[in-house]
Length: 429
Image 1 (cartoon, helix red, strand yellow):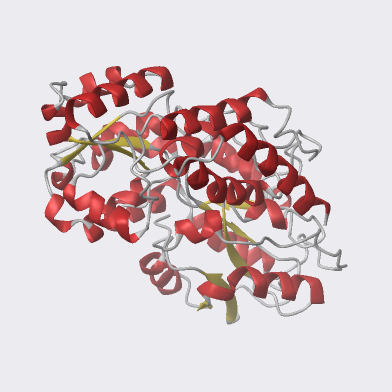
Image 2 (spheres, helix red, strand yellow):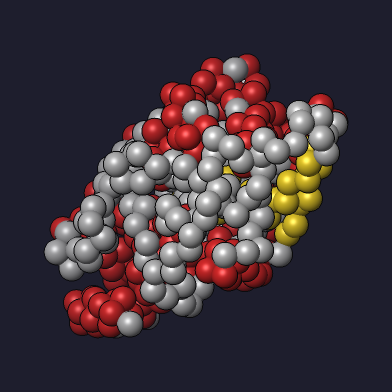
């Protein structure tokens, strides 16, 4: 999904506090939607957002299913709150709703949504990236909340002229080798800084902590039972220390992704590298049109990580769950995900299409002809399952606010201690 406001999504102050209140529903997936005949007119209300690129397919589905009308409603600013209100009240929820990978953990309440396994969704699992599929299920996999839309595997953009000025190779395979590990990446930054005076990356959060922690395993900030482990899990402190080390070495430009300075920096080459999922490429083109041919794409340190993507779910309030599921199954099938990729560039969560010529032949002239159809499928298959525990974004929000202080000279250890204390206080409310 090409997220319209990724910075807000990761760093917006405040998260839905507490757990969602339970609500009862007598809806039965085996009987829901069977009161009308197969040809009776049915209207499905679909709460969408600006990003998944499904508009053309929605129109196609209605043309092929004359009795189905999709009432697509978008209220980007109030999407989550409207859903929370409707679910809590027991009325007003749509037949279908989209939730981002960051948001779905907050809504994993079995009283609120149909278990798509009851419709046979478990048979679809083989078609999707394992890392993405499991983000939409309960911890034991017995409850399927949603089916994945697109995916956000990350790669590393690099500024060709900066590498040339540093006397470094600019071939993307060689660059991938130069930054194969996070230690290699740091050494690369030291070389670039020494030779050119340019920092290695955008900032300490988006340019180090976020991608690194997403390679930290299934449980990072919390254990499988939802208990806070950010202060005891070595992977979290290691990611913090690494990011702080980059900042103290002057290897960050202090230009957070999506900021005005970042937009200028993309155009003028203020930093040497940046981590980018497929949806980010469009933002780069939009914000740095004069940089065509000046950036290329290589693999990122440590493999890859996922940033972005959504799920389609069916609230239990729906009276047309069977029809809603039929729509979801069709629109998120591999064939349709490939179609969206070809038209909008949204990267599929269905690896079976990665071998299609539409993928393998795809290059991006803006990024020096980078074979994105080879790079991103390889990255996607390297992504491991990451945290999908409620309050994950609460912690990344706090970290995103504290790392800039370290970039400005604050003591990393003192800041870390204050960060942990603040997170514990926030979660205790």
